Length: 170
Image (cartoon, rainbow, N blue to C red; front, side, top):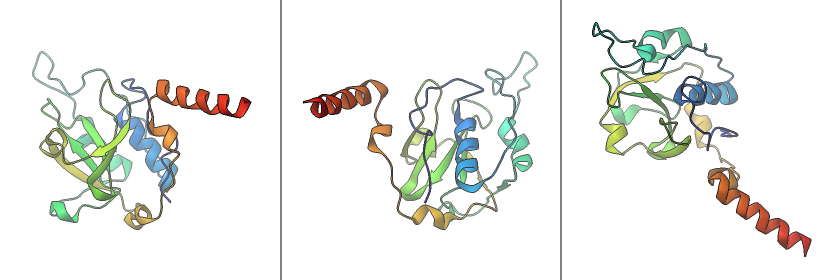
């Protein structure tokens, strides 16, 4: 069973709690894959005064045990990493492909979440797909049990929990 414990609803903090951190934690939690913690300076994807920029995902994916998947999009599998260049010249966002064209990811300024990959923002900015040999896509087909409260924003979750407690106290 694939676990999402603590991966959904995280507040964004570049370099520590971001899309790379979600992927690191997902692969460690579900497949025992430890990836190096790569330093991610602010706006590393933007060109500097000399027009140079870092290309962290493409420069380090092999160090993390991943390989480039060059097959047809319909042969992508759950567990593949989708790399996107969102308003950038290089891949600056990563997401994990889940069944039914869903992705687990963490965009700048938003909470980590699961949503459809078919949004143009994601689909049209994809620059690479990565695959790890230890990831078994069949594990994604097992029944997944998620506490629906973890999907709610903190303020709504708190209200629901308070309402539950009031009913128990009566």
